[in-house]
Length: 273
Image (cartoon, rainbow, N blue to C red):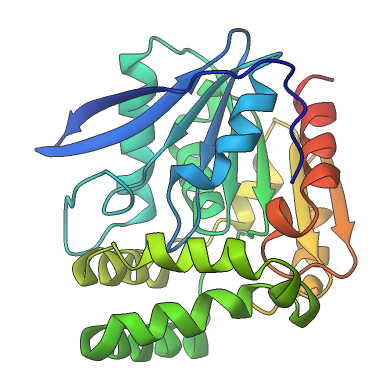
């Protein structure tokens, strides 16, 4: 794992209350604001290295989305627009007028929901192993089946799901990292996992939004991503008015771990161009 920062940068832990729930986030650095949104079964700690290194040139805010990490539950269905409003509340609290949102997987869905509601507050978006289409019928059914699995035994689900986000080779290479992700994910309550699954299942189709956006979009995708196939991403890259992409070989769904220097460098070039 890379460490570029010459001195240890402290991540300031903060929180707000949104609709009666505690929402946790970290903030560090100065400059144009980058907002980091984690994916499903993750929390803001996944961004710690990125937060530290990006803070050399930017103010960086990483948010625990509702139900994950140290953030509380808000609803039995955490829609992407609900999560986007949480992010908006954080930005309002920090008096941030414009930012770039970098969203991994589910965090990318939240970034698009935010763009749909608050595009004038955005400089750009990074869709990190994420995409704009709604779930098709088969995927919706799979979400419902997964909800039933989580209701019965969320521990088995977590321990089997997370390693599959990596290529086979990287699942071996990053076993200690995966074990840590699994350990943290095990702390997530059943109802939070189910609320996120329901929110992803019911999210809007934002393909039309991609075509209408007046801000740059960076797609980061893995050729071996089993969750979001590359062919789906390729069709979307041409939609935005200003679009860039980084396609990674031998990478699954977790490029910030599997190819962290490449993805970091792509992000820093994109946001500071």
